[in-house]
Image 1 (cartoon, rainbow, N blue to C red):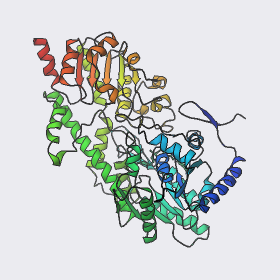
Image 2: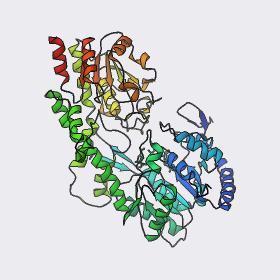
Image 3: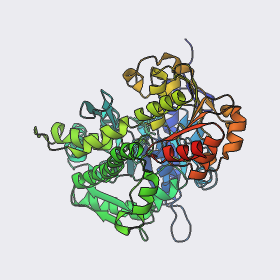
Image 4: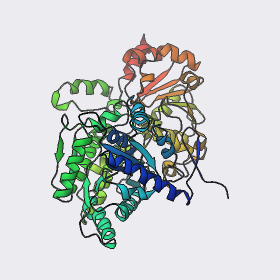
Length: 544
Ligand SMILES: NC(=O)c1ccc[n+]([C@@H]2O[C@H](COP(=O)([O-])OP(=O)(O)OC[C@H]3O[C@@H](n4cnc5c(N)ncnc54)[C@H](O)[C@@H]3O)[C@@H](O)[C@H]2O)c1
C-alpha cells in the first residue's frame, strides 16, 4: 500500500504517522514533560496550530519570569490529517507553519524551538494527559449555502466538538481548558460544558471541567505577534475557579500590564463581545457600499468624502470597503451569532436585520467590479469575453498572504463567468487554494465555484509573483488589494510594461487624480469603486 503523505505549501512531502508510531511518540513526550516539570515549567498544550494557534503557542513558549527563565513548556497539537500534518515536522524544526509578514514571527518560533527549547509539536492526542493548560485554537466554521444570504447557512462545529470530546477524555481533572476559538454564543456553557461533563462522568471525575473562554483579536500581517501579545483581551470562565485560572494564565503570558484584561461574568458575554465586535466592523464597512454606488453615479469621489469626514474624531474609523470584506472572521462571525440565537439559545423569532444584511452586502460587493471591467473594456471597443484580465492582489487585505474569503475571489469568479481570461499577481501568495483545489477547499462542496458558471478552468490558476511579467499584454488591470508594491506604480512605466493602453480598475482608491489623468492621456480607460469623479477627469482630457 502506498504511504500517505502530507504536502507543505512549499511542496515538501511528509509521510503521515503510522499506528505503531503513536506509542513511541507518547513515551518520548512523557520523558520530555517530566524533565520540563522538574524545572518548574507549566505544561501548555495548544490544540490546532493554524494561523492563530501557531503564533499563540510561540508567545506562550516565550514567556519568562523576572529573571528571564522560561516558565512554560508548550506542545502544539495538530491532528495528522493529510492537509495539516506537515505543520508538525515544520514546527519541530523551528520553522513557522504560517507565512507572516511580521518579522517577529519566524525568529520567535525558531528561538523557542531551538534555543529556549520551550516549544515542540505533536500529533498524538495522548499529549493531553500531560497538560496543565489546554488552549483550543481549532476552527469553528460557518457554512453558507448561497451567495449573499448568510441566513441560509449553518455553524459547523464538528472540529471543535470533536476536540472538546477528546480533551475531556484525556486531560487531568484540574487542567484549565481555554477556548480561544470564535464560537457561536452559548457554546462554552451549552455545548462544550455538557460534552466535557459527560466524558468526565464516564471517567469517574466528579468535579466540573475548568472551562474558560477568551477570544483572539489576532490580525495576521505586520503586527501579527503584537496583535496577540500586546493587545487587550476579554475573558470569562464557567465558574469562579475557572475564571481565576484563566485570569492568572493570561496575566502570565500576555502583556496585560499595558493592555489590561476585561473579565466578564459569564462566557456567553465574552463570546457575544467577539461577535458584536466583528459584526460592528462588518456593518460600518457594508454601510458604505450603497454610498459607493451613489458616488460612481453622481460624480463624487468617495475616497475624498471619507477623508473629509475622518478628520472629525467621532468618525475616525470610517473606512473604504474595497471590493469585498474577507479574512476568516468578518464574513462569518455575525452568522455564528444569528445561528446561535435560534439553534443554541432556542428563540424562533427573527430579531436580526442589520448583522445579516451587512454580511450579505460584503459578500457580494466584488460582483460590481465585473461590471466596471466590462464597461471599461467596452469603452475601449472590446468585449469582456476572452479579454486578458490581470488581477493585482489575491489576499483579503494589504500586505498579508491570507486569501480566505477575499474580495478578489469573487472578482475572479464573476469575470470568469463573463468569459474573461484571468491572470493573477500577488507578492505574498504562492498558491491560491480556493481555485487550485476548488473541489476540496475549503471543504468538499463548499467552494464558491458553485455559485457561478464556467469555473472549471480556474483550477489551473497559478499566481505570478513577478509584476512585470504579469503586466505584459494585459488588456485590463485590476488593483484589487492595496499591497505596498502597487501603491507607487508610475502610469508611464505600467503602460510601457503592458505594451498597450489597457482598462485600469481601481478597487481601493489607490490612484491619485494625477495618475488617473495620466492613464487617460496614455490612452487607457479608468474606472474605480466609489470614484465617480473619474468621468470628470476623462471629460477634461477629451476637451483639452
Ligand atoms: N485567522 C484570524 O485572523 C483570526 C482572528 C481572530 C480569531 N480567529 C479565530 O481563531 C480560530 C482559529 O482560526 P485559525 O485562523 O487559526 O484557523 P486554522 O484553520 O488556520 O487553524 C485551525 C487548526 O486546527 C486544526 N485542528 C482542527 N481540528 C483539530 C483537532 N481535532 N485536533 C487538533 N487540531 C485540530 C486544523 O488542522 C488547523 O491546523 C477561529 O475560531 C477563528 O475564528 C482567527
